[in-house]
Image (cartoon, rainbow, N blue to C red; front, side, top):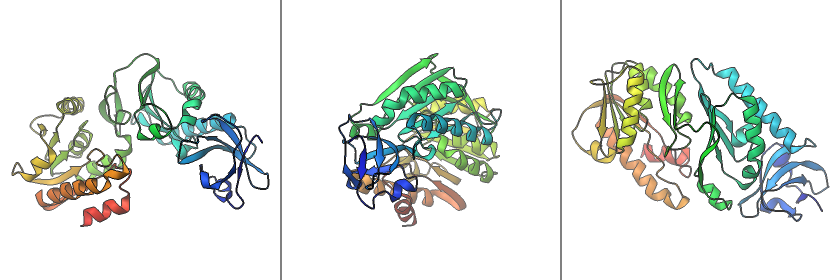
Length: 347
């Protein structure tokens, strides 16, 4: 036997182009090394496609192609389609930093690729994607004009997959930081010791919302990190912005981003303090408080403690904000889903 064979009735998800296979759906496995790509067949013997498999993972298989399309051909096609899609939506003169490959969302399971001008930063979350990394980097290098490629794979999922964390330079020029454009604004992205791949690209729409709603308001940008929300608020004609973070390194970067866009004292202040302590004090009255904290729950076991933290920080912000003011609140904790987060905030 050279293929993974599914149990009767367990092929519906794959026929509907779902990427994941759980061990309970598998009737038989061939001899293979974890991370290998294998054909996947229905109980009746029909070829459903190809996926990579890892016995160590709760998700034993992830599909990379369907039907009789060879897996390498499918991956090359998916990279080309992802590049073409982003070029439809982003004018590089306005925004030249974005997520290019969003793992399963772009049919490349376990692999994320972010573009920062001419620097590529990847994250690899699975053993199968690790084995596919040379092919995917080759495809990306052929589709983009890259000065540098880096990896930032400090992910909890790698431990389950039997992988160690890795961050560092991969190819091209070794680049410590780069200035990007997002919605016409400038930001320096520093890669050494950065969170995620260097910049919270997934918050672009929220930053646009802040620019659209900040006019005339006194803004507190809590957990400021790069100061991006503060820059957007000032671009939206906020009366003032206080950027608050415990990290002096983060505040230095936030200050540089303010200066890159022509903002600074007195309208754009930098404050080194603990957000919880600051909101408990009488330091200032704000019309707009932005809460975008780091993940409070990095493991499932942290959920209860994380919810206490989210409840506390949101209660403090709602008490502190002026009458008629706004609070924008966010969570990036994977294990605190939208329903639970909404419940915590409403309580």
